[in-house]
Length: 270
Image (tube, rainbow, N blue to C red; front, side, top):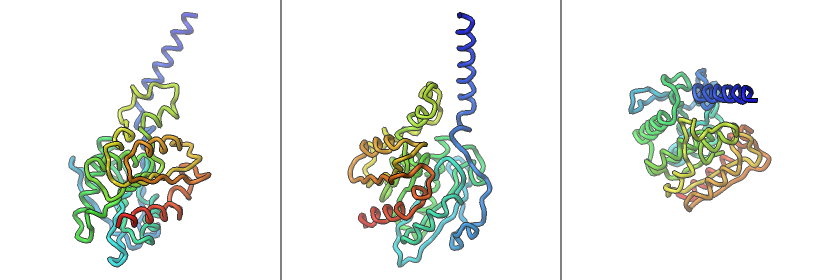
């Protein structure tokens, strides 16, 4: 019996060690192959680049709209997989609604140098905001953050430093620790995770208008976490639950209801 217990503890220790060493591979899933924007329906997109405070060059697409359409600009903070090309439908929808959009890739994504970490993505977010502010066709008081899934944590942290006109969070978690506990309930993830994205603690200190969008059948980020984050936030705020939608369903990723909800929420602030 004692030998079995020892073998079990050794096996569990090996599992913990493996999780510790590979945890960022379980969090970040970058894709480096980025097509030309015209190949994903964004022929009007400008290919742009900007530098982070630690010297990396990030690449992105800026999708403009005619001046008559308005001066609101949406910065999209991607989830943990793919690259900016995967968000082309979002930019198309926002352009149709009269919003310019910046799609960009974090470090390690879309062919960018570096490796993603919580600290690194925070630097990337600041650089993206700084780039948008530097454009002569942008009103810095009309910058909107759209954070999806992991990107919700990135957007929340940036909103603490640089208040946006509106903060839109799609499928946000309360923290990466809570999300990891949902998927790895047998592991002490609170002790093991290097990147934690404690959004539920940060959201209480953010005073900008907030729109939270979640799917009622989300199997990646439980809807209850998105609702808890919403409850913790200050007013003004709005919650939209998309029935029968899972995390990566088209209706939740860039569907008409998402675009319409964001457009209506932002225009209320004009």
